[in-house]
Image (cartoon, rainbow, N blue to C red):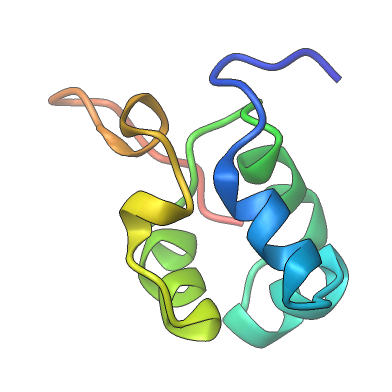
Length: 81
């Protein structure tokens, strides 16, 4: 899997909290593929991931994703998974 933004800090947080990608994806309402690609820095996280993952893990978004992964240039469409 080729990474664009690098493995995101949220991947380690999920592991520490003993969440699987599939389980976390189910809880926040996205596909496991989308969450995995977001956490491995292949794609930017969708608005759903940006809103729900911090709630699930009880951490601010800045502790889960790097600035490059969560900044959305004007006009960029974000995949919803």
